[in-house]
Length: 285
Image 1 (cartoon, rainbow, N blue to C red):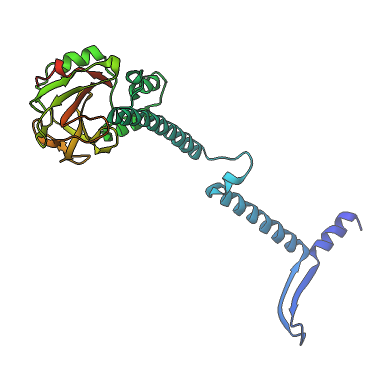
Image 2: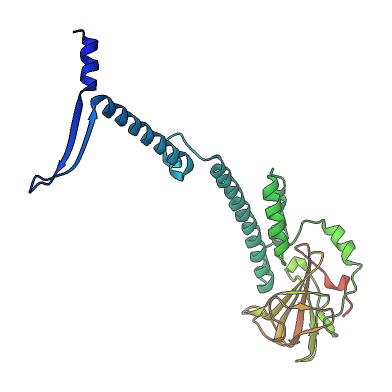
Protein backbone atom coordinates (compact mmCIF):
# COMPACT_ATOMS: atom_id res chain seq x y z
CA UNK A 1 0.00 0.00 0.00
CA UNK A 2 1.36 3.36 -0.97
CA UNK A 3 1.99 6.15 1.52
CA UNK A 4 -0.83 8.18 0.03
CA UNK A 5 -3.37 5.44 0.56
CA UNK A 6 -2.11 4.88 4.10
CA UNK A 7 -2.58 8.62 4.84
CA UNK A 8 -6.10 8.61 3.40
CA UNK A 9 -6.98 5.51 5.40
CA UNK A 10 -5.61 7.06 8.59
CA UNK A 11 -7.57 10.24 8.00
CA UNK A 12 -10.76 8.23 7.54
CA UNK A 13 -10.27 6.32 10.75
CA UNK A 14 -12.83 7.30 13.37
CA UNK A 15 -11.95 8.40 16.87
CA UNK A 16 -14.16 8.73 19.92
CA UNK A 17 -13.84 11.51 22.43
CA UNK A 18 -15.40 10.58 25.78
CA UNK A 19 -15.91 12.67 28.93
CA UNK A 20 -16.21 10.48 32.06
CA UNK A 21 -17.14 11.13 35.66
CA UNK A 22 -13.86 11.00 37.59
CA UNK A 23 -15.46 9.10 40.50
CA UNK A 24 -17.94 6.70 38.91
CA UNK A 25 -16.39 6.62 35.44
CA UNK A 26 -19.89 7.22 34.08
CA UNK A 27 -19.87 8.41 30.48
CA UNK A 28 -21.20 11.94 30.28
CA UNK A 29 -20.37 13.15 26.77
CA UNK A 30 -19.04 11.30 23.75
CA UNK A 31 -18.14 12.51 20.31
CA UNK A 32 -17.25 10.34 17.32
CA UNK A 33 -15.50 11.71 14.25
CA UNK A 34 -12.83 10.79 11.80
CA UNK A 35 -9.41 12.40 12.00
CA UNK A 36 -10.20 14.26 8.78
CA UNK A 37 -13.21 16.04 10.35
CA UNK A 38 -11.20 16.88 13.45
CA UNK A 39 -8.50 18.56 11.37
CA UNK A 40 -11.03 20.50 9.30
CA UNK A 41 -12.92 21.56 12.44
CA UNK A 42 -9.74 22.69 14.19
CA UNK A 43 -8.64 24.69 11.12
CA UNK A 44 -12.06 26.31 10.77
CA UNK A 45 -12.13 27.24 14.45
CA UNK A 46 -8.64 28.70 14.19
CA UNK A 47 -9.59 30.79 11.14
CA UNK A 48 -12.75 32.01 12.88
CA UNK A 49 -10.75 33.08 15.94
CA UNK A 50 -8.20 34.89 13.76
CA UNK A 51 -10.99 36.70 11.88
CA UNK A 52 -12.73 37.65 15.13
CA UNK A 53 -9.46 38.96 16.64
CA UNK A 54 -8.68 41.08 13.59
CA UNK A 55 -12.23 42.44 13.59
CA UNK A 56 -12.08 43.39 17.27
CA UNK A 57 -8.73 45.15 16.80
CA UNK A 58 -9.99 47.05 13.76
CA UNK A 59 -13.25 48.38 15.20
CA UNK A 60 -12.08 49.05 18.77
CA UNK A 61 -9.42 51.35 20.31
CA UNK A 62 -7.16 48.32 20.78
CA UNK A 63 -5.49 49.14 17.47
CA UNK A 64 -3.97 52.28 19.03
CA UNK A 65 -1.91 50.08 21.34
CA UNK A 66 -0.35 48.13 18.47
CA UNK A 67 2.99 49.24 17.07
CA UNK A 68 2.64 51.07 13.76
CA UNK A 69 -1.15 51.46 14.00
CA UNK A 70 -2.75 54.81 14.84
CA UNK A 71 -6.04 56.63 14.40
CA UNK A 72 -5.77 59.52 11.93
CA UNK A 73 -8.72 61.36 13.48
CA UNK A 74 -7.21 61.04 16.94
CA UNK A 75 -3.93 62.47 15.68
CA UNK A 76 -5.75 65.40 14.12
CA UNK A 77 -7.67 66.05 17.35
CA UNK A 78 -4.44 65.97 19.35
CA UNK A 79 -2.77 68.46 16.98
CA UNK A 80 -5.79 70.79 17.07
CA UNK A 81 -5.90 70.59 20.87
CA UNK A 82 -2.17 71.40 21.05
CA UNK A 83 -2.62 74.45 18.81
CA UNK A 84 -5.55 75.69 20.88
CA UNK A 85 -3.66 75.21 24.15
CA UNK A 86 -0.66 77.06 22.71
CA UNK A 87 -2.90 79.90 21.56
CA UNK A 88 -4.57 80.10 24.97
CA UNK A 89 -1.18 80.16 26.67
CA UNK A 90 -0.02 83.05 24.48
CA UNK A 91 -3.22 85.00 25.11
CA UNK A 92 -2.94 84.32 28.83
CA UNK A 93 0.63 85.66 28.78
CA UNK A 94 -0.50 88.81 26.97
CA UNK A 95 -3.38 89.34 29.40
CA UNK A 96 -1.11 88.73 32.38
CA UNK A 97 1.31 91.37 31.08
CA UNK A 98 -1.58 93.80 30.59
CA UNK A 99 -2.92 93.16 34.10
CA UNK A 100 0.56 93.57 35.55
CA UNK A 101 0.86 96.99 33.90
CA UNK A 102 -2.64 97.85 35.12
CA UNK A 103 -1.63 97.03 38.70
CA UNK A 104 1.44 99.24 38.36
CA UNK A 105 -0.69 102.10 37.07
CA UNK A 106 -3.10 101.71 39.97
CA UNK A 107 -0.38 101.58 42.62
CA UNK A 108 1.75 104.30 41.00
CA UNK A 109 4.85 102.07 40.87
CA UNK A 110 5.66 102.51 37.18
CA UNK A 111 8.83 101.68 35.29
CA UNK A 112 10.34 104.34 33.06
CA UNK A 113 9.41 102.32 29.99
CA UNK A 114 5.95 101.30 31.19
CA UNK A 115 4.31 102.65 28.04
CA UNK A 116 6.32 100.22 25.94
CA UNK A 117 5.28 97.18 27.93
CA UNK A 118 1.58 96.96 27.18
CA UNK A 119 -0.05 93.70 26.15
CA UNK A 120 -0.30 95.05 22.59
CA UNK A 121 3.44 94.58 22.08
CA UNK A 122 3.15 90.86 22.61
CA UNK A 123 -0.08 90.76 20.62
CA UNK A 124 1.64 92.37 17.60
CA UNK A 125 4.29 89.64 17.75
CA UNK A 126 1.64 86.95 17.84
CA UNK A 127 -0.21 88.45 14.89
CA UNK A 128 2.93 88.18 12.77
CA UNK A 129 3.00 84.40 13.19
CA UNK A 130 1.15 82.11 10.81
CA UNK A 131 -1.87 80.56 12.47
CA UNK A 132 -4.51 78.11 11.31
CA UNK A 133 -8.14 78.96 10.57
CA UNK A 134 -9.30 77.06 13.64
CA UNK A 135 -6.89 78.98 15.87
CA UNK A 136 -8.06 82.30 14.41
CA UNK A 137 -11.66 81.40 15.23
CA UNK A 138 -10.63 80.42 18.78
CA UNK A 139 -8.81 83.72 19.27
CA UNK A 140 -11.84 85.68 18.05
CA UNK A 141 -14.03 83.81 20.54
CA UNK A 142 -11.69 84.47 23.46
CA UNK A 143 -11.15 88.12 22.52
CA UNK A 144 -14.91 88.67 22.22
CA UNK A 145 -15.35 87.36 25.79
CA UNK A 146 -12.66 89.67 27.20
CA UNK A 147 -13.88 93.14 28.20
CA UNK A 148 -10.56 94.54 29.29
CA UNK A 149 -8.08 93.81 26.45
CA UNK A 150 -6.35 96.72 24.71
CA UNK A 151 -6.22 96.32 20.93
CA UNK A 152 -3.36 97.57 18.75
CA UNK A 153 -3.72 101.13 17.47
CA UNK A 154 -1.52 104.09 16.71
CA UNK A 155 -1.30 106.65 19.53
CA UNK A 156 -1.75 109.65 17.24
CA UNK A 157 -4.83 108.11 15.71
CA UNK A 158 -6.21 107.38 19.16
CA UNK A 159 -5.64 110.97 20.20
CA UNK A 160 -7.54 112.19 17.16
CA UNK A 161 -10.34 109.76 17.90
CA UNK A 162 -10.50 110.68 21.58
CA UNK A 163 -10.79 114.35 20.65
CA UNK A 164 -14.29 113.61 19.35
CA UNK A 165 -15.43 112.32 22.74
CA UNK A 166 -17.56 114.53 24.97
CA UNK A 167 -15.67 114.01 28.24
CA UNK A 168 -17.56 114.67 31.44
CA UNK A 169 -15.52 116.44 34.10
CA UNK A 170 -14.97 114.02 37.03
CA UNK A 171 -15.02 116.89 39.50
CA UNK A 172 -14.94 120.67 39.59
CA UNK A 173 -11.92 122.08 41.38
CA UNK A 174 -8.46 123.60 41.10
CA UNK A 175 -5.59 121.69 39.51
CA UNK A 176 -2.81 121.72 42.11
CA UNK A 177 -0.34 119.53 40.22
CA UNK A 178 -0.34 118.98 36.48
CA UNK A 179 0.64 116.02 34.34
CA UNK A 180 4.44 115.56 34.14
CA UNK A 181 5.77 112.35 32.67
CA UNK A 182 9.38 113.30 33.48
CA UNK A 183 8.71 113.01 37.20
CA UNK A 184 6.38 110.06 36.64
CA UNK A 185 3.28 112.01 37.58
CA UNK A 186 0.91 110.45 35.07
CA UNK A 187 -2.20 112.43 35.95
CA UNK A 188 -3.52 115.63 37.48
CA UNK A 189 -4.28 116.44 41.13
CA UNK A 190 -7.53 118.32 41.64
CA UNK A 191 -8.17 119.94 45.00
CA UNK A 192 -11.77 119.61 46.13
CA UNK A 193 -13.89 119.49 49.24
CA UNK A 194 -13.89 116.24 51.15
CA UNK A 195 -16.80 113.91 50.41
CA UNK A 196 -17.58 115.64 47.11
CA UNK A 197 -18.94 113.31 44.43
CA UNK A 198 -16.65 111.96 41.70
CA UNK A 199 -18.24 111.23 38.31
CA UNK A 200 -17.28 108.97 35.38
CA UNK A 201 -15.85 110.87 32.43
CA UNK A 202 -17.32 108.48 29.83
CA UNK A 203 -19.47 105.38 29.56
CA UNK A 204 -17.52 102.26 30.46
CA UNK A 205 -17.02 99.18 32.62
CA UNK A 206 -15.37 99.27 36.04
CA UNK A 207 -12.27 97.05 35.83
CA UNK A 208 -10.85 97.82 39.28
CA UNK A 209 -12.44 99.00 42.50
CA UNK A 210 -10.38 98.40 45.61
CA UNK A 211 -7.86 99.77 48.10
CA UNK A 212 -4.10 100.06 47.54
CA UNK A 213 -1.61 101.18 50.20
CA UNK A 214 0.01 103.79 47.95
CA UNK A 215 -3.00 105.44 46.31
CA UNK A 216 -5.80 104.51 48.72
CA UNK A 217 -9.21 103.71 47.32
CA UNK A 218 -8.95 103.48 43.55
CA UNK A 219 -11.51 102.94 40.82
CA UNK A 220 -10.59 102.33 37.17
CA UNK A 221 -12.96 102.37 34.19
CA UNK A 222 -12.37 100.80 30.76
CA UNK A 223 -13.97 102.88 27.99
CA UNK A 224 -14.28 102.15 24.29
CA UNK A 225 -11.44 102.80 21.83
CA UNK A 226 -8.77 101.73 24.35
CA UNK A 227 -9.44 104.49 26.88
CA UNK A 228 -8.81 103.94 30.60
CA UNK A 229 -9.56 106.41 33.37
CA UNK A 230 -8.30 106.19 36.97
CA UNK A 231 -9.67 107.92 40.06
CA UNK A 232 -7.37 107.69 43.12
CA UNK A 233 -7.29 108.66 46.83
CA UNK A 234 -11.09 108.31 47.16
CA UNK A 235 -12.70 108.11 50.58
CA UNK A 236 -15.38 105.70 49.33
CA UNK A 237 -15.98 103.63 46.20
CA UNK A 238 -19.59 103.39 45.02
CA UNK A 239 -19.20 100.95 42.12
CA UNK A 240 -17.96 97.36 42.05
CA UNK A 241 -15.73 95.67 39.47
CA UNK A 242 -17.72 94.61 36.42
CA UNK A 243 -20.35 97.35 36.79
CA UNK A 244 -21.26 99.36 33.69
CA UNK A 245 -21.46 103.11 34.33
CA UNK A 246 -22.66 106.06 32.30
CA UNK A 247 -20.84 109.34 31.73
CA UNK A 248 -21.57 111.70 34.63
CA UNK A 249 -22.66 108.91 36.96
CA UNK A 250 -21.34 109.19 40.52
CA UNK A 251 -18.76 106.45 41.10
CA UNK A 252 -16.79 107.55 44.20
CA UNK A 253 -16.28 110.23 46.83
CA UNK A 254 -13.31 112.60 47.22
CA UNK A 255 -10.99 111.59 50.03
CA UNK A 256 -7.47 111.59 51.43
CA UNK A 257 -6.54 107.89 51.45
CA UNK A 258 -3.20 106.28 50.62
CA UNK A 259 0.44 107.09 51.30
CA UNK A 260 0.83 109.41 48.26
CA UNK A 261 -1.63 112.10 49.42
CA UNK A 262 -1.31 115.41 51.24
CA UNK A 263 -4.96 116.37 51.61
CA UNK A 264 -8.44 115.88 50.17
CA UNK A 265 -8.11 115.76 46.40
CA UNK A 266 -8.67 113.59 43.33
CA UNK A 267 -5.74 112.19 41.39
CA UNK A 268 -7.14 111.59 37.91
CA UNK A 269 -5.34 109.73 35.10
CA UNK A 270 -6.29 109.13 31.48
CA UNK A 271 -4.63 106.40 29.41
CA UNK A 272 -5.02 105.91 25.67
CA UNK A 273 -3.88 102.64 24.10
CA UNK A 274 -1.70 101.89 27.13
CA UNK A 275 -0.08 105.35 27.14
CA UNK A 276 -0.61 108.03 29.77
CA UNK A 277 -1.80 111.39 28.36
CA UNK A 278 -2.41 114.79 29.89
CA UNK A 279 -6.09 114.89 30.96
CA UNK A 280 -6.10 118.71 30.67
CA UNK A 281 -5.83 118.33 26.89
CA UNK A 282 -9.25 116.68 26.87
CA UNK A 283 -11.13 117.82 29.97
CA UNK A 284 -11.79 121.18 31.58
CA UNK A 285 -11.72 120.91 35.36
